[in-house]
Image 1 (cartoon, helix red, strand yellow):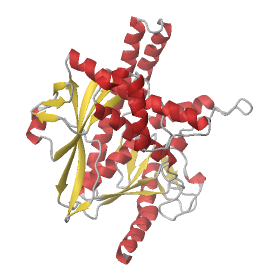
Image 2 (cartoon, rainbow, N blue to C red; image 1 turned 90 degrees about the vertical axis):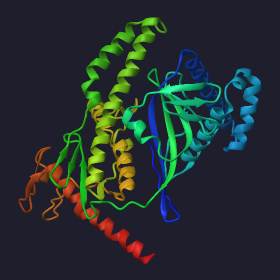
Image 3 (cartoon, rainbow, N blue to C red; image 1 turned 90 degrees about the horizontal axis):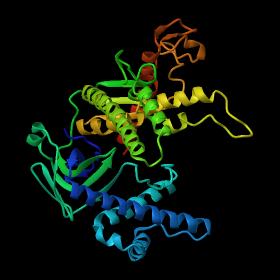
Length: 409
């Protein structure tokens, strides 16, 4: 079954333009896999070489101009220095330059506050992109300089086929397996949600993965927690192996596959939850959680060491195992597909405020499960009370403000 990785809407002649991706398992032959690995390695070399040169020149006070024109000039120098780069197709190398430029632009944008581009390692998941020159027929895709490659596709997917015009093909290597994703673009009628008027607030947590304001709960997969003991055994086995030996490489592959398995389990659970919520509610209101800030390390410094470092490390693993960022991304595009909307509100005091009288106090939370207001005596499930606060107090105020802006415009 295809997986959707991105969606963007834009007005176009009364319709909306949808960009959608489909992901499949790729099954290249041995010779084709060698070529793909060569292309991936060349792209990684170009990325790391230009990034290293730029960092060196920044330290010397003479950084490279950030732009495609400047990076293309460096690519010509790299091809003269490394002749084997000429054997790789030019499109993946040029797309690598585009990605590096965008990474720098995100890092320099104060609104995004993104991390600066980092060096790529050989064993990390990496890919190459072909914006043109490809062909797709049945269950095969033809890539420049590689040829026709089969990809796995179910009978249901073949009936549906790829909707829209394919704008690019990306080949990705992850945990020893190859994947191909097709980026498509098409015009569709502006959607209107079937459940117009249905609004729900969502409170995310560790005890209950998601609590909805209608009183229902969604349990999380906790994929990493379930496989944590197996991962520890493999890592201990890896530590006893001779580095770069056959057993060491085999153990590294098993660890990578286990990480890939936990990620797939987590993503599957998030897909099911986001699909059900987006279909049943036209407006979804959730907390604006800063996961990066929530998972900062508590180690401190040598002069001022942190406290409860082990407990904070375990909490960080639990938070990162929930996939809240991926859930937010999937909710956004699935609601946009159906004509709904996703709103974010401030998370402060949503778990301490009484939904009945509005009193805010940390004493209102007796335990993780129960909520009892010390002012009016209102008792409820703690997560449901927080979800009602998100929907009612913070959420409806946001809707009113946005409706006023639209009317004023």
